[in-house]
Image 1 (cartoon, helix red, strand yellow):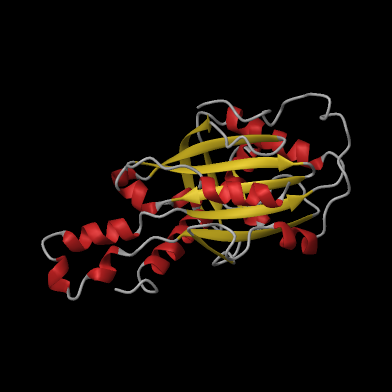
Image 2 (cartoon, one colour):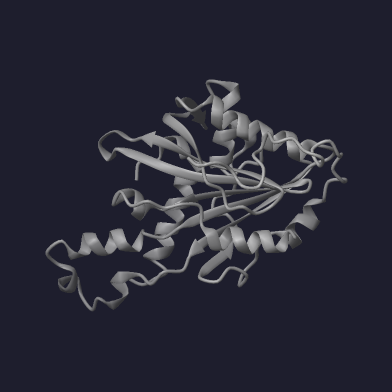
Length: 264
């Protein structure tokens, strides 16, 4: 099984899971300031929003994240109007997990970063090499890679601060879980918890939401929203292999680092 048919297939599956975060079946405090932090800068109006063209120059591009392949989001970001939650307060959390920018951005753009790992099946010369359970192990290992969707969004006035606050508030308000729907598919997260964020930007909130997928047990999704002036960077990472093996994973640090560097 070559990389194009193995690892790329897993990456596509991971993006599909991100897009359907509700039905995926396969903390600590925030950084410098939490999303609802108040300080000298909180009262200052943000600059005019960047255009979509300007955001496309600022978002990570091919060759800019060591160890990752960067390109368009396969399948695209779902329509904002088709992602809903039973409790409106929880919608910002669900939007983050589907790559939708929170609040009302003036412009936004998205990219996908897929961890570039060697496919364990590439070394096999025949199916016999992967007999006795080794094939399943190889497939699981080939799916053990981070797929991160990055969305940059720019806001007028204090829109970025308010949008980040809505996410921070939602993480707290929806700690006990919530139900939601996307394109007619319904599902439920059993809990939402704040995590330690990356420490980049002016303010941020990182969190995980757990989707109890029945026989597969608890499946976590991880996200972080970071404010850089009047621009928000939303990161959502999924690792199907880690989920299947119950191995811990987080939002991809190299992706956050590379994107933060372009927003300084």
